Length: 529
Image (cartoon, rainbow, N blue to C red; front, side):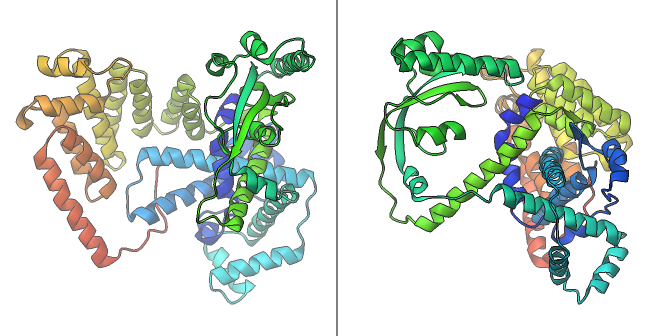
């Protein structure tokens, strides 16, 4: 788990940017979900019990997660007007909402541990903002609106205070950050860099300590002229790529291309001076700058614009480092199988992801979605037959519960059936040979097989087991533009011109109708958990 969060540090940084991009839970989200959480010392046990994840003793608030997930779903439907939310988007929304909920919970825990206080004036000012944004006239009207939305005023006040605590924590952590003229100059600086890497196991504190000690000893030998740098690279460096070139990076390096801790040292080091061991996600580095130069500033260069951009980058790095340090030094347990499945899948732990999907099936045996996602994993692992078994289970559930059926399922079945036909050598010989000629190392996907079937079969002769799925997906797509476009992609691969032409006509009609009616944005989208 720790390695996963290091690997996806960029995702965490990205969610930090969104997280602090505006006022937390502002706008319609305040009234999108009832908040039953009043965090008092008497409720700590309940908070831990109901948390979707635990970081040591810090609960990741399920209410915060639900509100963020609702926000993502609302935004998607607002931008896509009545769109059916694709299952992949649902999972991505879960992953993003979870990351932001983790951020929020950790910042709030820090605020409470540091006894950060929020004044009545701050709370009053924030309430005034809410009153203004909803075009209300008074606190009395705000209370009435909250009551109408079944949101206890006391819980709302508590949430407002927590939001302010999180924002104040951010401000405290960023108080000393600045961008100076040297930072601006370095943006146009290019350096030649060499390094020695001593790797460690990122999940082992002992391994990290040994790596640092070894790097320190190697540096001592270099600086005391006991060994030349090039020789030290050949003996000690564990970077297989740069080791072949005496530790040298082949290209000129600029700001943004290196791990930020290495970057900070590299762009401040004089030429020829060796750094102290620098820790990255991979291990400890000894770096040396061998050359530097400056490139010309662009004609549209604006000093203050660049200063703001660099400030944002620095702030994001500080906040994401804070989160990563908290996570990587803690026991992290994800309890919610919907969140755990997508998180495990992102880190490549497919067995754990499948186990979580099985838990989803136990919780909601009617849903075809977990089977669909398991099939996607099986297909990615080249287990086509096992993928089709899951898709067939999903198909049965879709038939039994039509409101839960969706186009993507049948498109995936068409691709999987086609791929299995290729693997079982039941396609035309010409098509089999053409697919087999694909370059080594390129996995044969369902899309590739559909494409070659489209070329090798006349439209009327495409195997019915494939066309039936495409036609059923087309039927399920109804008036949803996103689903229709996905069906069209597969129909185009198969050269099913009758379907593609019909979809094109329908898409034009939908576009014309949308412009005519200027359809209102949905305010309460429904989606599967």
